[in-house]
Structure formats: C-alpha cells, structure tokens
Length: 107
Image 1: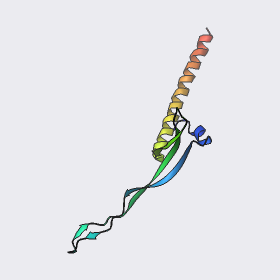
Image 2: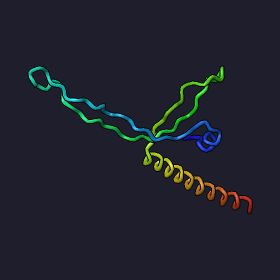
Image 3: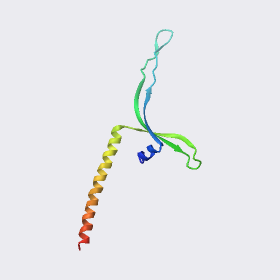
Image 4: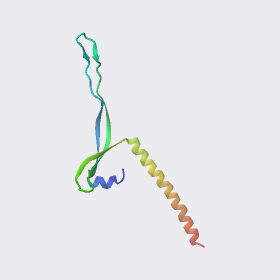
C-alpha cells in the first residue's frame, strides 16, 4: 500500500482481522413424512486481513464509506521481495553510471 506509514500516522488507515462467513449454518428440515427437504450444513468461515482507508469527497470534504482492501501475508511478502529486487537492480545501475561518470571526468 502506497504511503502506508504516512497514512497510518495521520490516522487515515488502519488494519484489522475479520471473520468472513462463507456459509451460514443451515439446520436440517424434514417434511411431515420425515423426508429431508433441506440438509444441514455447518457454518464455514475464514479470517481475512484488511487495510481500511478513510475516504473523503474531493469537492465537499464529506466523509464517505471507508475503502477496505484484503491482504494476505504471502502477497505482502511477495511485494516486499519485488521492491528489494528492484532496489538491487537500481543500485547496480547507479554504480555503473557512477563508474562511467568517473571515467568520463578523468578524460
């Protein structure tokens, strides 16, 4: 998430763990003859990690519904690795350019 640190310090973003219901509990239903018309099902849930951002109307400044984005730890780790890789490539390019500059200045 771009500018997460700044948004967090300004109180404009927060994180939360929520339980999401995938399947509500359903009780078994039988008709008057005892035949099952609806089979019972257990409640199924999973936990979700979310970032909640405050959202305001650009023209009026009025507070709007928060923007909620779900994250997974592997997804965040992958983004961190991608950034580190990009930094390494940029540092190598910087070193090459500094070497070129040094050689050109030596002429």
